[in-house]
Length: 593
Image 1 (cartoon, one colour):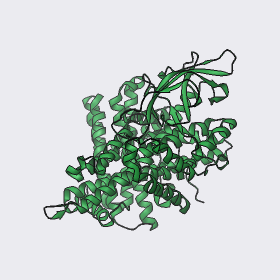
Image 2 (cartoon, one colour):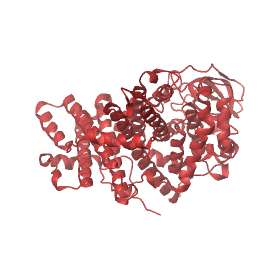
Image 3 (cartoon, rainbow, N blue to C red):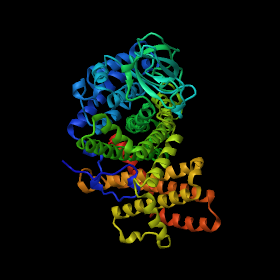
Image 4 (spheres, rainbow, N blue to C red):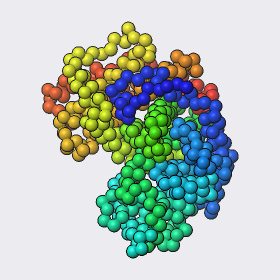
């Protein structure tokens, strides 16, 4: 078994990572691919024929499909075998999430049940709670929902006012409050509900059965997209919750909520890949079949540009998501080997990679949005018709930039988490930045004539990391404690961090692919070249925005000069590169990269 180099969350910014030290999607084993294929087959045979009926909320259809998935074992992929699950690894579960991600509203219901609905119990529950509820959830006998958001508490989850008061006899908590935007709310049997006990400042979490007296609901919400997903407001009116149904410890609810959100973010990064695949396949099929001016749409350069960019977005998302997933799994396994309890090992492993989880949620959701938007454009007038598949793809994609915290919140998390890790010396962020500053005058544009292809890509990645470090250090030095109020600058920094991680992940994947002989098609060079072109230009702009926002003319000139050198890349003919990428997609008729 391969031994991987263990990285800390955010440490990629200060470490040189080698291709052999990352996991790439081409390395999934046969068992993992079979599980993913089972999920994909279930979507195509059991769910896809009912897409319209699901969107119309055909009574009982969604819970029936979820229970059928449970009967096949698909709801318990990550649940230990002793609780009727498959007991599969984090990485395997992520691949299964991708396969389920192409099922629109069903994907949302499935993820809500298997993720935020089940994992708080799995990771934080007591043995008695596990024995009582997990077998029911993993087999689909019961379905689950997660009740955190309130009318006055969205991104600021701890602002919730739902209350739990201990009864006089000390046997129950009396729960009162209102929750909204509760996915699976209309049919869930078990709720994870967050509330404050007495006058506590922070939340606690409770396992609440929907059949208990005092629970009422508003009608289903009428939403822009994911119309088939059950989304309801839920009211708790003097609901008696046995004291043994508190999840974790008193006051631990806020921590539970945050950690489950980390998990939800990277899971969403995998889920959107499934949506990308379906949308790209629709796009290339329509472009190949639709005739205009005597030629198929796929023959036109403007359409090839769109198809190629769709491929680049998906390929780079895949590269980064599975790299991070394996890094998380490695830490989880180390935690277990060190004797850490199962739940703690998983939670700590995921929480360690807080910045990666947040950045993958942002990049993945925005890449899917780009892909579905171009899908509508490729379909043209038909794309605007509700009878064409572009309609559902477009509407359903939009929620992903809001799920698990808005992308604005997640960008702030990316920057804040990286900076705090540096300030607390968990990673050598500022120490490495100081080294770069000390040699600022020695920064030069790389001599590309003396470097091999992958050597050059390594140089580019190192250069942009230096740019990120310089600007993080300069911004922190200037604003100190007031930096939290400079959201525009923090978002610029986050974007630079995102671009550096995505470019490095994709570069290492292509290097590992081509050097190992797994795939030798030169189109992978084209994908990496186009991504490099797109991200280096975008990174330079973010850096200019930061530098221009607060520095004096003299400092501004000096840093702009350094930024220009650090974000330099040797331009290639991206038009021809995109044409070759599109031609392979058109030839294959489906995404096969």
